[in-house]
Structure formats: C-alpha cells, structure tokens
Amino acid sequence: MSVAKNQIGDPWVWGTIGPDKFDCVGLVYYSFRQAGLADRIGGYRGVKAYRDWFADRGRVSRSNGRRGDLVIWGNNQHIGIYLGRGRAISALTSGVKIHALHGLTISFNTFLRVRLKRG
Image: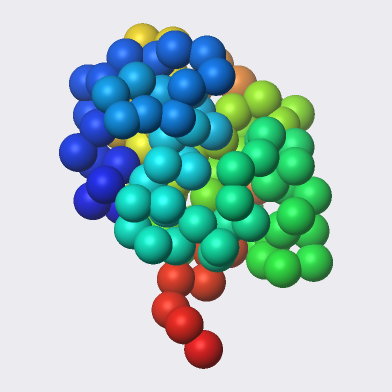
C-alpha cells in the first residue's frame, strides 16, 4: 500500500502501468509488482479478469474487507486497493487519490482477498 500511496497525485492515462502515470489496473499491478507480490494477484489483467481469477481464491463479503484487499466498483468498471476504515486508493480520471469506498459515482461491488503473507 505504501507504493500506491507514493503515487498520489500522479495522472490517470488509459492503458498505463507507471511509473508516473496509471490507469486503475495499472496502479494495482504496479503497486503489487513493486512490493514483490504480483503473484498474489495473478499478474497483470483487466478488472473482470481479476474478479474471475479471484472467484475461487478470495472473494469476500462486502462488509469484511481488510487492508490490502482489492476493491471492485460497478460492473467490473473500476479497481483499487482497500486501505481500511472505509477508504481506498485508486487511479481515477482525475489522478491517483485516496477516497471513500462509497464515494465514487459507481457503486462499490466487492472485495477480493489478497493473501499478503507467504504460507
């Protein structure tokens, strides 16, 4: 999450994965790759593909998110990283920002549980 937070203010550009501009998927992948955890999210893929990959690996109830989980909004329209306390970080069209889980114009959909610890 610290990698993602270091990107706050970077611009949004469709189809980019950093290091100084991102789309939503690019920010998620870049953050986990830089932390050496890209294997925990199945590598680089689109929002729907992340949801599908996690289908039998870690989809959790909407009220049970943990720091570091992935967050999906809408009908697989947007993805970010959950920070806890109802906040997430994601690459919005206005740039990389921390925002309320329920603060986007599209509705919060689900958490995808990322196993951050080895074992």
